[in-house]
Length: 258
Image (cartoon, rainbow, N blue to C red):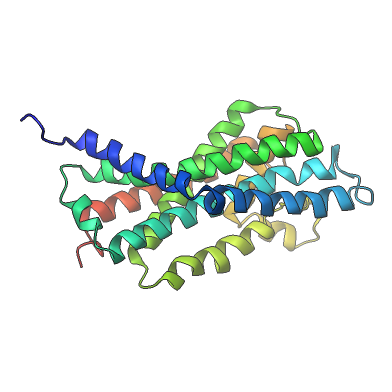
């Protein structure tokens, strides 16, 4: 029927809305996390670079770049989707989305695109700035791109799940501040876990963000503490269930139709 909105058009509209939300508030959504990460590079990398010259064969200011990029990207993807879904529920416009002709998988993609878009903007901006500041190389672009996509899908989907279950704004930030941020700091961002004594080295391997940092480090620097295939495998093994969980919530309407 002429003039009727299709599911594909609805998905495109939702994705455009989520990316426009990021673009309109770019000083908060992109610029702020980029500046924060650059401060880490300046304070830890350039100021300590004279004392901690190398980690293995890599200069310290370059060594910390992959972890900082990964940390900024996943935090942003999570926060973006947790907040946008919670806002949609709080303001009840989620009902318009649920009553649209979109399939649940189209709704999931539409929302996840927003978190991925924000993470890619931050990651690309940080990579460009880090190249100018530290001369960090790009050894394996394909591995870097695949790592970025898996990490962003994982945390955008996880943020969607948290946003659906959240009962207040505090709930949306609790996971990011109490779980994701500490795991990122102890995930080998600022050091090689191979230098840690037992049992801390072994315990680091139970941290999922550790594998994302290692995969990002391999993509940029060409080396990591564990196999790139193991890092990608762990990240994919987390990303797929997180995405399916988010899609199941849209399919079932749980917490969305309450």
